[in-house]
Figure 1: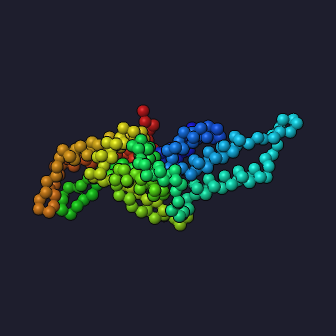
Figure 2: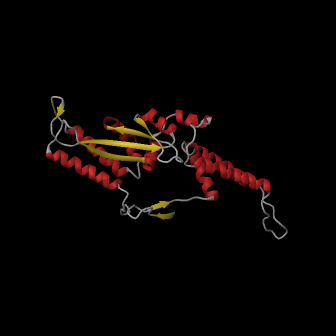
Figure 3: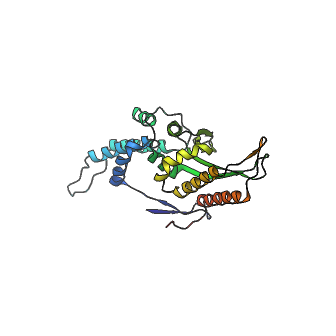
Length: 258
């Protein structure tokens, strides 16, 4: 475990859990059957590990390891360059996925996988907006996943619905990003599938669940083509939920959860 500190003074501190060498290979072997976004990186690292374990280092008469051969150094440099290319931020063509990865994308995304994806890449929030046909603000639940790998978002969408939007790269040297979004009635079934598996965003999921149940219990009437104002206590409760989830999502410093 390593402490990365704060990128900006007002942000929360970040941490990194690191595996190297044989320990990294053991972790990758366990995860590799489930990887999608990093499937190619995982396969390359396992191939590199097999080469390392299958090779024999020569020693001199004193038992000291001799330098690697030029051929072996070139091979290891090729592995390094391949991983660096796969991890780069720059724009890439839509990949031709290997057969095994295509199978993973078609076979459906499990609730546990999606929960891990939401914990790492997702945002759960309550939005607030004002409409000209209603005097009180309107509140809506929203869940979004952002990633540069459109294929995995399409696979998630196939099983759990949602709407995919494009997010062009903010810089020319970056990859384009995509966002899978759920709003309003789409969210209840999604939460029922993943809430029990969430770790990092479990509190946000609980708040969204409270909000959805409250909204179902307090129907908003209509007047002609517009909406009737919400009672003050309803607005106050929904605003309190919005502020609570916003506080959990903020980048600023926070106490370590108990």
